[in-house]
Length: 313
Ligand code: 8YV
Picture 1 (tube, protein in one colour):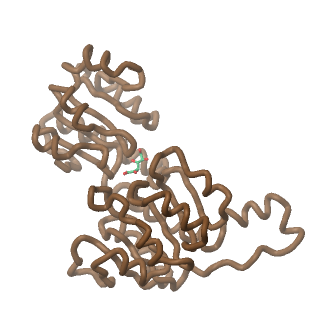
Picture 2 (spheres, rainbow, N blue to C red):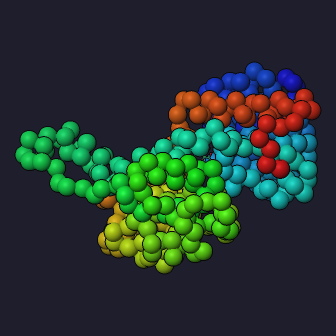
Picture 3 (cartoon, protein in one colour):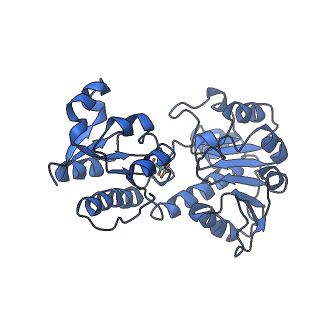
C-alpha cells in the first residue's frame, strides 16, 4: 500500500500521523503553503483524504482530486465533508462513531458539574489564597435538575443515561419522536428550552441545526437556565449567547466548541458563569487511539477490497 497517496488535511495525534506515514505515501497539506502546487504535483496519486472536525473535504478539494476514492475522518462529525458530492462521485466516507461516545458524554456531565458547582472558580479561589479570608459562596445543585437534550443519537442517549444517575428528569428534541424512548419529547427547541434547567446540544451540525440555539431559545432558557454545547460551535448564534451571558439573561454556559475555533469571544473570559474548554470532548489517549485505529482500519479495508468498518457513504 506504500504507493497509495493519502492527503492529511489537518494536524492529528502523532500516532495516527506516524502510522499513516508507515503504511501509505503521506502528503501533509501544511507542507505545501501553495495548495495549487500540491495539487498540480500529486493530485493524480492521491486516493484518500484524512481530515477531522476542523478540516475535511469540500467540493473544491474533491473536484481537484480525480483519483479520490475515500475520505476517512478522524471524527464522528462530518460537517466538513461534502457528503452529497461524495455520493454523487461514488467516493466512500467513514467516521469514528461509538468509540468516542463515552468520553463526550462524560465531558458534558463534567461541564454541567463544573458550571453549577463552580469547580473551576473555586479551584482558583483556593490557589489564590482567598479561602483564608472566608468560605467560598454557595453554588447550585445538579442532582434532580431537568436536563433537555437536543439530539438523542448515540451521544445524546449516553448523556441522558448519565444524567438519570443524578436523578434528573430527561426531555429531548429531535427531528422525529423516538417511539421506544422513555424520555419526554418536545417537538420544538423553544418548548424544550422553556421546560428544562440545563439544555445540552448533542446533535450533528447540518443546515437545519446551524444556529439552532438562537435568541428565542436563549430567552426561553432564561436567567436560571444553562447551556451546554459539546456539538459544534455553529449550533449556537455566538454573539447572541455572549450578550445574553454578559447581560445576565442566561444563567450560564459550559462550552467545548466555538464558532471560530480556536478563537473564543474574549467577553467570556471575565465571566464566572461560564466554563470554557478547547474542543476536547474526545480528547483522551484511549479514545483518540481507538479513533486513529478506525481511520487506519477503514483505509486498509478499502484498499484491500474488504467491507469498511464504519461506513457513512
Ligand atoms: C474531533 C469531534 O474529531 O469527533 C468529532 O466530531 O469533534 C472531535 O472528536 C477531535 O477533536 C479530533 O479532531
